Structure formats: C-alpha cells, structure tokens
Image 1 (cartoon, rainbow, N blue to C red):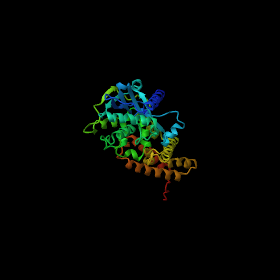
Image 2 (cartoon, rainbow, N blue to C red):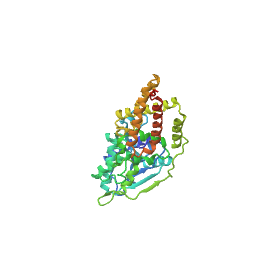
Image 3 (cartoon, one colour):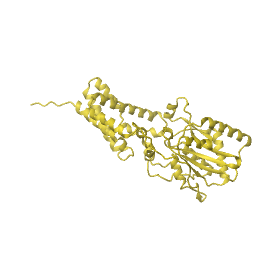
Image 4 (cartoon, helix red, strand yellow):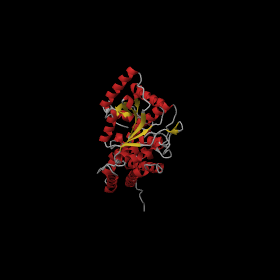
Length: 379
C-alpha cells in the first residue's frame, strides 16, 4: 500500500542486487544478521491511508541493510484507473537501501516501527534468498487485491513459506467485519469513508479473519510463536509522528448534512430530480463495476437498493408528463429503500448512510403523494 515514489532508487538497487547475486550465487549472511518486519504509519493520500509493510535485512558484516517492499506500483501504467477498477493492476516488489527508505518516511512525516524476527541464522538466510529470488523472478509482480493480495499479505506469505509452516495467522479482531476494521483509518477523510462504504459490497461484511492491513500484522506478530518462542521481539519505534487527522472545510460530515438538508427543505422539483438522478447514476456505476471488476469487494453490492438505477426512469416520465409512471417508480424505490434499511440495520455503515436513506425516502414519498391519482368524490 505504497507508491512507486522510490522507483529510480529502487530500480538501481534492484539492478545492483541482481548483478551481485548473479556473480556470487547467494550472499552468505553472518550470524549477526537481523531480519525484521517494518510497519509504516498511515498518510493522507488515498494510497497511504492504511499504512505499509516491508521486510528489512541487516548484516553489518556484509554491509547489507536492505528493505524489501511489495507495495510498489507505477502511475504511468497505461489505462491505470481502468486497470485498478478492473482488478488487474500489477503491483511489484522492489528493494530500497534502509537509509533511503527511512528518509522518505521522515519526509512524509509517517511513523515507522520494527519487529525483529526470532529465527535462526539458516532461516534468515533462507528468507533472504527467497526475497532475492522473488525480486528476480515473475513473483516480483502480482495482481493487487484489496483484501486477498497486497503488500502485507505478500510479506506474510513469504515469511510463512520460509518457515515452512503457517506460523503467522490472524489472531486479533477476528470477531469483527472487514468493514468495521477499515473505519478508523478514515478519520479526517469523511467522503473517502462514505465512498468506500457504498461501493463495497457483501465481502467486506464478512468477519476479518485474514491479515490484510499493516497494523493487523503488527498486532498479530505480538502473539505468534515459532519453535516454542515468540516469533517477533517487542515492537521498536524507529521514527514516530503524532497522527493528526487533516482539517478540511468540505471533507467532513457537516457539509454532508447541510447539502442533504438543503435538498430536502428547498422543495424544488428540479433539485429533487437532480439528486435522484445522481443516485441512479451511481447505482449504474456500482452495477457496472460489480460485473466488470475482479475485485470481489465490489461484487454483490446490496447498496444498489438505495442507489437504484430505476430512479433514472423519473427523468423520462417527467419529460413525458406521465404522473402514473412517476408514482410507480417512486413507490418501487420507497419499497427498495425500506428493504435496504432493514438489510443494513446491523451493518457498520448504517449511521453513515442513514442521512441518505432519510433524504431519498422523504423525496420519494413527496413525489408519490404529488403524483398519486386522485379518486374523485361523487356527491
């Protein structure tokens, strides 16, 4: 979950390591080698909201101090956005010198923590060899998946592979959903939180049994044992910054409530139609990405009951002055909103989308009343 901001340095170091290894087969590490898992703090960019995981190998005898990073990607990838949405964007592994790695996080004011692994020298060597082999092979590139395959899960996989056992497993917060686990990371990023809540579907409501975030791995490592001893030593702080939520005059719940209140109380047909059209267009987008994307998190998106594409039919019926059509679409969507409310009543994002439920419900009821066919009274 990191950018390719180190790309030039990383490629040079990768080339150096590849050439070095090709001549010397494998560098032999000394008995004083230290191998550790690096956990990096969150940032304010969308790609850094969840932090980052890497592996550090340090051997002063061989003048090695390298950080292996499985979270790099290239913004210049052709059709970057569409590849990311579709779920076939390639992430890749790179190696950085430790000082350069730390300097970058120092510059970004992001904390860095380290957990040294308590494994024998032969397994440190094996991990080092596996990391270098991964860099020089097809394994250096992988298709990014938000929960199932990312910079953290790749680190977990290569350590477990080295230890020849599933030593690192999720052992904290396994009784809450992925959606609930994600929420604290959006402090100060209200609309990112809202957007994630409505675009993610059924998968993120499953219990969070997989390690997919850096700080989840950090917490799990504290409780993992290997060969009758803790796998990782106590967490060590390399650099630390106070994690302050960014201030924004617009990216906050207040603008959200003000905008929705304006739509409800202004009571203008054109504004109601515009609002419901935006909701309907979002529904079409959710349906499209659910079918198009291989990101399982975007599939089976029940939020489409609130963001119902049939709302766009209101534009046609208003254009043709078909009151019966308007009434039928309004009633259909009122039922859809009611079903949606009871469906998410126990979900983590209920409070977040409740203002949208109230707004849509209020406008739809108003439209249904305005366009209901009046029954004549015969005296």
